[in-house]
Image (tube, rainbow, N blue to C red; front, side, top):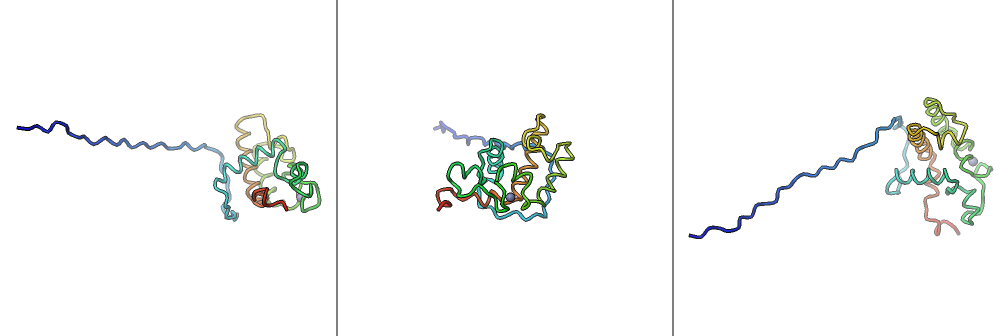
Length: 156
Ligand SMILES: [Zn+2]
């Protein structure tokens, strides 16, 4: 009598469901704004990167790109130098978007006319909330989508 020696027991599948914890942030997104069909793979990462570029001053806006020879002009289409501050606080091209940002900043008791307060508020919670708001502004402005073309190809 032969006993079946090895019985294969199928390995138990343990469902590994790693759920990514979503950060709970104050979401105040208006869905009635048309989001451009971005060909960019991960918009959130993109925005994060753009934000840190803006914070350091090395953004893809014309002022800096002109300094490093990647843009022929340091000026914005409105005629002013296109700095981070200009883009965020003054450019008339994004008045509507800025109005939304201003309202949300004021809800957080952040001075919306001060670039330091909106980009680098001291408190951590506020920092995250303002990042979100500025991120929305950046997205809605569409400015960095225009600039998202690889530099080597965009510069003639
Ligand atoms: Zn402008």
